[in-house]
Length: 535
Image (cartoon, rainbow, N blue to C red):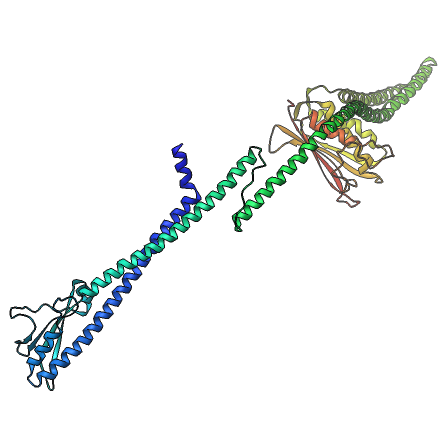
């Protein structure tokens, strides 16, 4: 508890003001002491220099005047009167020495030894010592008659300077103490008022909005206190409004909850219907694709089966003719050989046409079985796609549109061939209906390769050089029920089904790029990226 109080005081505004005031007081006192000391020293040196100058002129003039008349006794009397007996201020002694070094006048006893004179650079040290020793040459007309040395006492000056320094320091300390007290008082006053704000804030946090801060004065803290009180009143008002709103809100929530429950039930029923409708539409789309395959394969089967039927009919006529010749014994060797050649040709034609029909039926059977099932199995991609292309090409018989496939025979998938065939069939139908609308010729390419960045995936590219997709539509083509053939038989589910199959069943991604227009560079390319092994 004691430590927390000490820490609070140290970090408080009062403590900060106190430290600032102490620092300012010490700095100002030091500055004032240093400036006053320099001023007193300068004044003392100027006073000493002035006293030395004036005393030297007076003494030299007196000695020169009376020495020229050999009246040194008068000078002795004059000097004795000028000497300060207590040696605290003014002249301390005067000694006159002639050119031969003999003392001719002295205010001291005979055994007095002349002190060492003080140079100009040592005047400050000499003054602090209490006496300055000065020597001046005595000049008579035409020659130098010796020198005059005297001592100038500075004890009173040094004592006065020390007293003035002490007095100045005391005055400065008193002023600084007043300033320090004022700053500390201001800091305590600010801290006290800030504590009021803190206590009021804590009361508001605790939920008591009735506690107000007393407003005194017209400074910024008073304005802050006033606005704090206004804020507390505004918060209390808002709380009252919210409380009243909450009381009325309960009834509204109950009513709204009942409405939402009813709406939720209706939405769930509609969702069930929509899912069922979507399932039926998807099945219808699958059956429509399968129906197109059936129509195309049936049309394609007409040719080989019709050819085989015609050959078999012709063969029957040939056999009947040979039988008649044989019965009438009119058969020649050349007739028999021609009959055998016709038999060989007829057998070859029947075999090739029936083989073509068998291939079509086998491809259709594989595609139809895969398309109507969603079973996962291991399959060769090239073989599966070759069967798909065989069943799709009959739809291009009446057009000048070609379809090519480039898929390596080494790619094997452990995936869902049925949904994959459904996706590619939808893309094929979409290209015929939209891409080659009002165009009689074009190209469709189906290619696949292992993803160069991750060999666990395969990339499909289904492209055509049709009209392409309009820029405004390309971001919406995978949306359910979006179609440019609204009211013309388009359900808007083809590409949406493709997207859901690729993402949901095949665990892959599908994207599209397209160039719209009727130029040679227009067209659409779908890219499918699916894993080789679907988890």
